Image 1 (cartoon, rainbow, N blue to C red):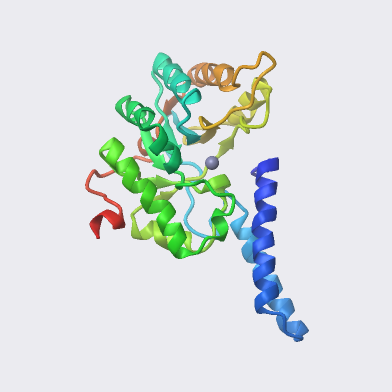
Image 2: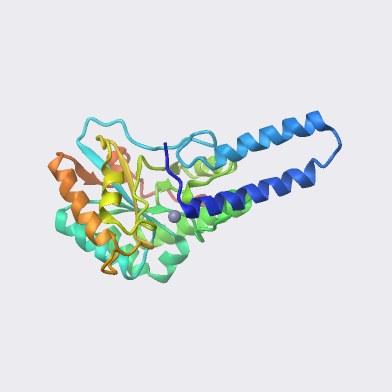
Length: 276
Ligand SMILES: [Zn+2]
């Protein structure tokens, strides 16, 4: 069962607020049974949109069936001028690979960090352009812009377009899956989430991301922002080396998503926008 943090709750409220507004404006007729059915269907849809690891609104990767003793490390919300270099240094020290789900606007601000990660052999993936808290309320046209602008920039920076997409906070709507399919993008969620943006206690984060861990797991941490420990350091400074040591002790290798999922991101797989 995925846990929900305060930021997720805030975003859920935003989304529900939007859905309630739509229902109220389009079904304000005095037909109680019909309104009840509509409200029930809208509530079911809202629940599906708010479930980051469910497949109700489209195919969702949460882990990989694999015979290999490996797990995928993923970092969201970067690049960040302070955090991303620290994480890259730690990964290099341990010979580990990861996937970075980048926010397009941040990648435009710090393109050198994206290039550095790609050059080091990590995969660069798409986490929308703005990371809007209302992402799940966007219509098809605006969703396409969020995806395509980010694809285009990251392809320019890395020499290949991302092969995976992850929505802000994991909240989606039914318009997203067809857009991803048109672009040959796969939707990637996670199996283990650290809540490293909120929890200042490294031991608890480490426990969350390693609890009942199995080969094929997908771990979610953040390089865009991080909670601070008692000494004022980003928790990732403590969590990541400890995590990599613990994985090694269990015979597990940290890899990026394409490696875990056995997929090769084709260089020629350009976004629909680039083809046009
Ligand atoms: Zn995010």
